[in-house]
Length: 287
Image 1 (tube, rainbow, N blue to C red):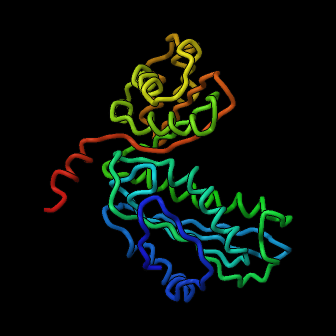
Image 2: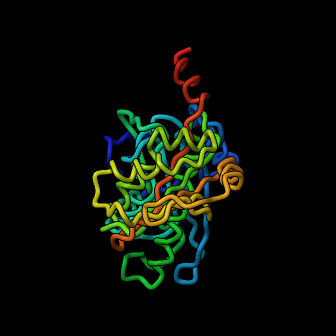
Image 3: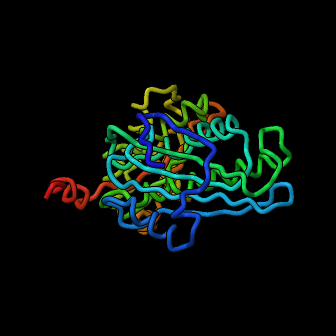
């Protein structure tokens, strides 16, 4: 469990749960607390589901608050399950899930020299070995994704100095890959992040990020919403209630929706606002 892996790699293996986690709830609590650095809160999640009529548990813990950017840095994450699952199936599931969860978060655009994501399965639940052909595979994969997405969002929400979680959903792109690139660009934009911190409904910052993402975009067909508030339609500004937008942007979570009307691709990315506290924390990091 202490193995550090090179950037952009994930590892899945078959292992027993760490003794500290398996012994009792207190051990799990201590583990979740021990891995934190500049984090303000613990990041943990646990779900249960039925596989072959047996109760299967998937649990996870993570740390990460600064130097967070797509490609998984800088974070430690541990996902454990008592399900019996084929090693190759777990490795494949972990990689696919990482692409749409941990690789879709950003705090500050900086990465580190190392990170780690481990998935471990003990097989103690006694189910028939899981693989994509198993009748309960889809349910297990959905639960696994829920665990990873919950941890990823918790990291983004706890970004250094952050006051808001920012969720960017892009649809209508030429491909999912294109949608991911555009969503990452928006949520990672310092100008967008600053506008969210200032509760400024500046749609111009958002469409500028769309345009510089390096992906195909029809400049005449872009729609943008802040929550349910439409601010841009067909790439043209529309009147909206500024007071309602201000109130929305002061909430705990800000959802930015972009519809490109240019294909079937879609993706979601998560980040946070950029605040004075982020500068304070990192200006005096060593002291």
